[in-house]
Image (cartoon, rainbow, N blue to C red; front, side, top):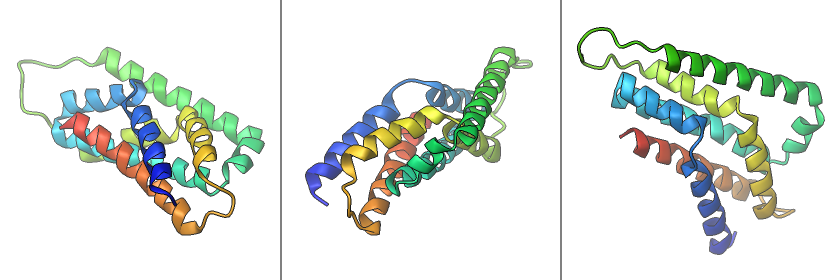
Length: 164
């Protein structure tokens, strides 16, 4: 794989990760309400959820998922429910009493980060469109895995940086 291809794909993935959206809101909320550890775990969870979609996209399985309309609709509805649940929690959050030390729950952060990435079909469509430009027919398994791994590192690193 050519370095120019890797660089181009990396820049596009970085711009996608840096664009504001529900993922950024969840990372910021978890960092503010649960501390740095919870924010970092949210970033790690998001990176892993993102990597699953990246792997699906580079392996060419996106056509199978898009062809299964019922599964894709279920994924969209699940994503909508998660976003509504997170919005409700953000709107009804009531810090009790004076400022206190953050009660960090890494598991909660990881789960929310993973869910916001994995249940967001826009990420799936984005990655399918991006990787269709960079994965050539006949690319080896190693090349495809490298692309998915780069997407994981870029996305996870960005949200970990935001949390810290």
